[in-house]
Length: 353
Image (tube, rainbow, N blue to C red):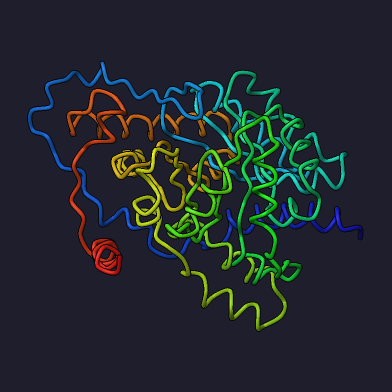
C-alpha cells in the first residue's frame, strides 16, 4: 500500500476508535473552576450577546468546532454535517489533518465538501508541523486553498507520534519551519496541540515565531496516546500508550499560562458543555473548541448535531446571564473560584517564577 493509502486508512481507524472505545483520559481542570454567581445580573438573558471577533472575523459565538476528521471517503458526510452546522450557527470550524488529501488528491473531496456546505463560515485548514518541515510552505498553501480557509492550523502531536506505529519521532526543525511559514503566508497561522497542552515557554517560542493564535489542545479530552494504543500490535507501544494517556497540561492550566498576552487563544481539550466554554472565556480564551462531543452527534444525523450545538449555546447563554455578563467581553472579566489540583499547579507556577 502506498504511503497515502496508509494515511487514509489510519484516518478511518481513528474515527472508529474515538466513537467506539473509551479514549478520553486525563483531567482538563475545568471541574476545579467555578464561575462566581451573580444574584443581581442586571441584564436580560434574551439580550445576551454571545458574538466574538477572532483574527478579524466576526462569529456568533465563542463555541468552535475543533479539528476532527477528513482524508477518507467515509468521512465526507461527517465533515459536511459539521460544516453545515458551522455555517448555520456562524461559528468557526477546523478540519482534521489534510495530509492524506495532499498525498492523494483523490481524497480532497472529503475536505472540499466543507466549504461547499459552509460558504460563509470561518474555516481553519490543518497540517502537521513535521509535514510542514518536510514539504515546506507549498503544502501549507495547498491545504488552505483546498478548503478556501481563512487560517491554517499547524498541529503539534509529539506524544501521538511517539506511540503511533508509523509515527515520526523527530521534531527537530519544526519551529524554524513554522517561523518560515509565518514570514511568508498571507493567512493567519495557528499553532495547535492535540491533547497535551501548551506551556508558557513553548507559547513564547511560538509567538516569537510569528503565529497569529494558539490552540491549547490540552489534557482532559481525547487521548491520542490511548487511541494509538488501541491501534498498536507492538505490546511496548500498547503499554506506553496506556501509561502516557494522561500525560500533559490540563487545558484550564494551559489557558491560564498563555492567555492575557494580547494574543488570541483557543481552548480545546476536555470542554464538554457550554458552561466549560464560558469558563474558558473567563480564564482568558477567545474561543472554546469541542471535537468528540460533536463528532458522535455528527455521525448520527445533521438534526442531532444541530440539537447538540443548540444545547451548548443555551448553556453558554445561561452561564453569561448568571455571571451578569451582557457580552463576551464582560464574560472575559468574570470572576472565578479555583480549587483542587488546578489551583495547586497555578500557585506552584507563580511561586516558581
